[in-house]
Length: 288
Image 1: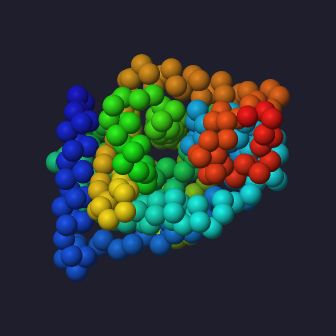
Image 2: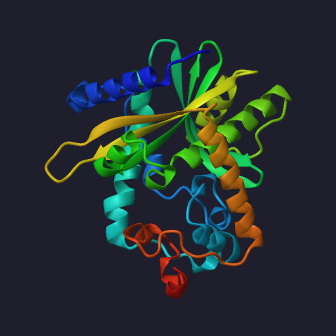
Image 3: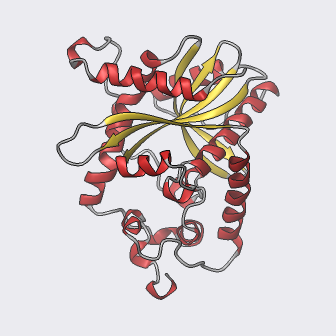
């Protein structure tokens, strides 16, 4: 089970770039846009729950999610169009594309937004890569900028590329799924949509008993300045990384604080990234 995650990531990047260099008329017949990802997938009830994807996010935002979720206001149309819609579009293409970009021995499974749970925290699983030897890589699709990728490549801390804490949480969640399979427990939260439920069941069946989660991969579509082409970038993190273990502990502590402590200050201090926060209008400016 000693797999080189960097080589796997490079193989996937090359595969995505190869497909994007081709006319869509020459793509494999099963590569069709997955419209399930073009609409909201988090229900109003789920918005009131702390999410695994919020790991090491702004503690003030997490406090609002747990204590005053009714104050959530969706981002304005421009922010949604520039930042969230391209990510949804890439995710709609990523699931049908990725099976054609796998290295030898690996198979990609669309997990159908299978719900994960770690100590009453919830998240949606995008996909799984499973090797013939039982190794498992958790995957997620992202849309980001070349500015963020450059910081990532320079080894900047998680605050500049906040996927590492999310990766830790999701790997915990998939390990819980494997434990459930080993102990004969069924997943309680399968989707009602037939296609989505089929994907979820296929992913669960594919998870090997005594399988081992070895890492996490982000398949990112990277936005460059106007006029330059977008490109694929695959980030990765190893399950046994000590930094990830530390982030996992910090994340659980932060979730605990959101449930038990008073409202903390804003982490970012009214920086541009605050415009993505659905609680920005209610975030008290004198506490930033």
